[in-house]
Image (cartoon, rainbow, N blue to C red; front, side):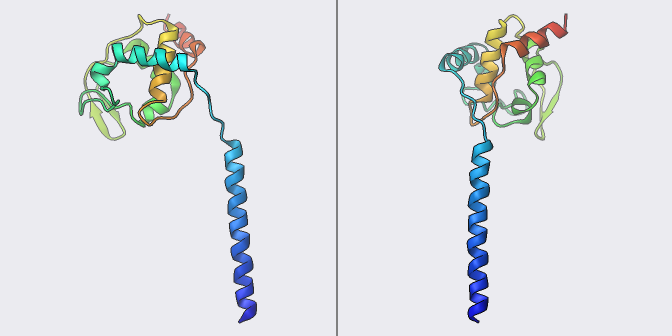
Amino acid sequence: MKQVLMVILILTISGVTSHAQKKAEAKKTVKTEVISAAVFANGQKVYNKYCLSCHMADGGGVQNMNPPLIKTTYVLGDKTQLIKIALNGLNEEIEIDGEVYNNVMPSHGFLKDQEIADVLTFVRNSFGNKASAIKVSEVKAVRAEKK
């Protein structure tokens, strides 16, 4: 009986130690990107001027019309696709995370590359989102594709 208890104790201690080591390793590999206050503030300014009326102050959108910006695959996923939507607009029904939205999003190609990068970085890091920043060079590259 003592041997069984001893084995259980050893396995328990080993499991706890192993779990703690894995958790420590995971923390080491997580890179957190620091987004400057200026980029965030400029992105919020652009959002408030051009995006808020459709996507709402909380990023929740309008059911069946304007998609939410909260933890959706199209916001947190492929940067190029998101940049294209901002630059070119969207004039088709779209399904996002199982919901269908059908309001037209106008092109915002008139915005400067820096403004597009800032507003998309703001959206990807607001409303509970946490994703990498959009760089001006990425916006320039996508804008150059359509020429």
